[in-house]
Image 1 (cartoon, rainbow, N blue to C red):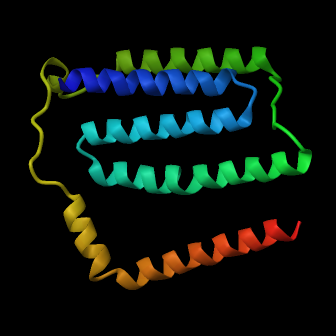
Image 2 (cartoon, rainbow, N blue to C red):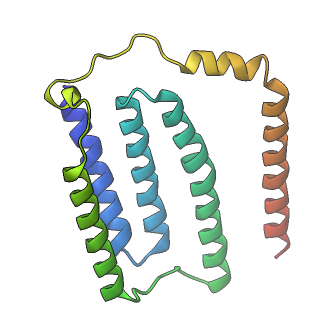
Length: 167
């Protein structure tokens, strides 16, 4: 069952990343990027890196992607329509991409990995999550830093709304 979910996440990441490459509508690309980031967070969960997965969702999906979507929406509002892109340097980008993929495949095949046992059988799932310890640390020892970061983000959001409403 785990392998089916893994391949479903892999397929989601691959299809949404290819969609980002070939779409001309920036808003559609941003929403496809949302799917890509979410799929990558799912892969992190499979790697037992649950803290990294939560960070992926909070920072990239919750912060950077939302900022990108707001930027696209405000730009589209000023231009009076859709924000479309053009595909420039297709040949150079394609050659660079293919050469990077060939280099990565060559490097992976030539590398002697010490343990590849996880490929033959699925790794045992850990019963203990590290998110609980991170949450306890954030809410006890580091609560001041967490509250300051939250207030800074709130001030930035209010400032953005005020600047946008004046235009």
